[in-house]
Amino acid sequence: MSDVLLSVFNRLGDYASKYRVISEGELRLRIRESLELESLSMREREALEENLGGDLEELIFNSITTREDKISVFSPDMQTKINYQGEIFYCLPTHRYMGTELEDAFLRWSAIKNPPDTVAEVVVDFMHRAGYQIQTHEVRNLHICGQYEHKYEYIDLLAVKSSDKHLRILILSSIKFVPYLMGGNSAVDGDADADVIVVPTEKTPAPFISFFREHDVGEMMIWVADVERHTLDPFIGIPQDKEIESNFTNPDKARRAVSVWMKKMRILDF
Image (cartoon, rainbow, N blue to C red):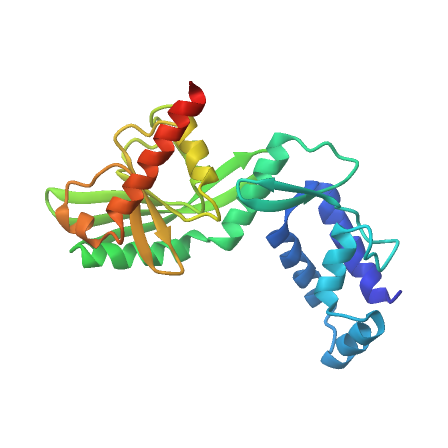
């Protein structure tokens, strides 16, 4: 095996040993980054792919996550596949994963795939359409201690329309960050001055359903941003400003969906 692959597998093995649970998206990203560190020329990469018989990133991914497609004895083994909150995760086969490690992995991937500044672009455009100006825009840090302490960014906006119409808006990378930001599992006690929290869509409704079952944000509103479509819709709460309401894409549909979730939860709880 080439020195390049040995170096890549050693680096990925160290990463796997450190975190033990990694999302599919993050694993593919780390493979790409690890190959980039090797500074392979186009010709060197093509020669390696021809020798191995396929796309290099895909071959490395399959070598790590399957038993059948190993290309090296030095490849880390992350063959245990788990679906959690709509995302696919891989963990070490000898490791009985802990809930905190799985949650850590979900938060890491959320921060990577939905950085708050991309969500903020949707929010700022939306507020401008509703007649608001962004008076302050601050990037803050949220420290979360799981298996390791991680620092995640979120954005704090103050949107002003008039002396009696202003909103403090907090923008996060996932609904799963909200309980950590608020500092509790019941009504808001960590950042009570906020009026709105904005989070991006997820692959499935599962994270939102879990949040709805387990947490109460009091009078605070939560909106959901579709970054690809550049749209916003309500999840919890109704704004007093009709211009905000009229700029939501499908507010009635979104609220009906939440109502259906609530009915299903009551049946399951019963």
